[in-house]
Image (cartoon, rainbow, N blue to C red; front, side, top):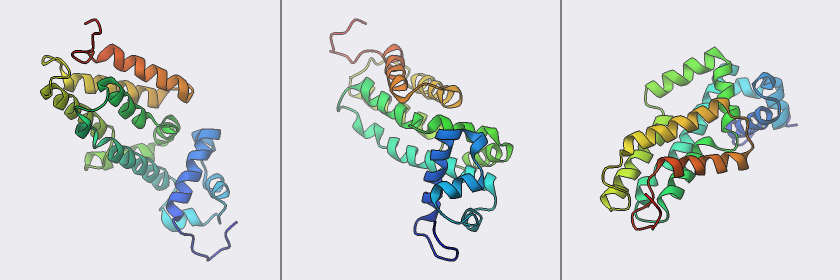
Length: 202
């Protein structure tokens, strides 16, 4: 336990990581100031030194994790022409889902104050699920230009369908990570046309 009054490097990330572990183990109902600070091994007052209240903490956790996801998926269009189209999309979708994605999403909607703060931040331009959908759509458009997927593919609708399904899984999923990976790859195979020249049936 860190002693009172001693600065903790990267305290915010330490608290965020602790909250993810609490959420994965106990769900949103177990996410309290005491649970998070005990998990982080720090004084109970640390959370309120950095956040206005628990809603502010959870909202910032959600926004921070989505910002990271957007940064990871953002370069997807630059992968056009490399690797397998379906696999590239599946990896992007799995990044959005994440190992702790469903638990974090459940925490966001379990508290009205959190959901409202997150919605407001996204409305003001903070990276959210829409950033992932946009990256997927731009990637598919780039692959069309390269002739790797059919010219009549509606990339924007494919991206919407894929991101929307992942969002549904975020909100309602109870599957294990390995099951999610298989489901996402099956979904991508069902939605995305086989790469041109792959020899797969159309």
